[in-house]
Length: 337
Image (cartoon, rainbow, N blue to C red; front, top):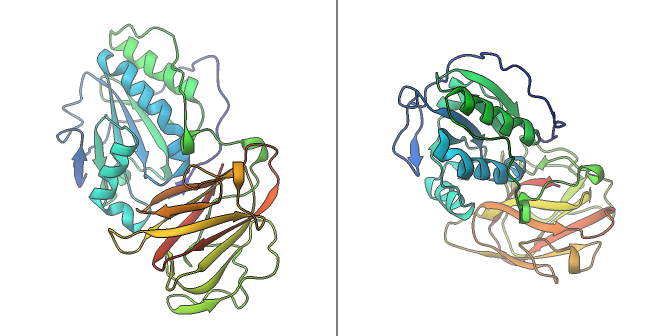
């Protein structure tokens, strides 16, 4: 199960599309949004685009504007887009969280919830995001893992629709991405995704290391090297989240990227946790992200990805610090763009 971040270069010529197998079953889905349950047999005669996603994945968020645009442009010409939401974190199994993400991201095409990974396994998929393209005869003809290749992917859709007797034309969509959906600044991105739970974290720099699964008082070193992170205060580091047990818990990280995002949310549903973000020890000013103001203040009200930093000018190596003014935050992962 891997996030596939790097975009692949665009192609101007469409290669001959092979047959990669039959469109697998969706019978293992644990629920459906925006649609009654769909079946491979019931989709016969229509071109199908299947998009595997999980709602906090930054790579999927940056792909989403194109998937939304393709659904809007080609749904009346014989294309069915199906999002398959296969969760990464525990809270992404919650149907209300997924339903809220579908609404917030203006997703109007059918979404299968795949909490048991049955559809994921039927496709033998390993990545978020992933695209699978099936022709009107129910045959997989193309796939793409990760971001990028949007021109190529749309040309595949057009070819499969033309094979099915539609006339989709050759014009390509243009998108106006906002917030976390804006493409990464790949040229300046030198910080990889990192997790805060003990199962998959790297470069943890608090003295003494991780005390897994138990409350512990952590301190942060005076300086962090690039891509190191640390905690300060009373935290419990579990398999997936790091949970602040008291107010004023802090997370610090040294990074090199235009954007810094943090997947987090209150441990108790229906509560909120106030926070303040600092950049090199100062309020972020114009470098604040969509979920903080210029003084770095914000409030975590749900379990999702929060965009906390977006540097407007020259991107440099910086130190990020977030202080949680209330107890009970659960942090899961840093992502960058």
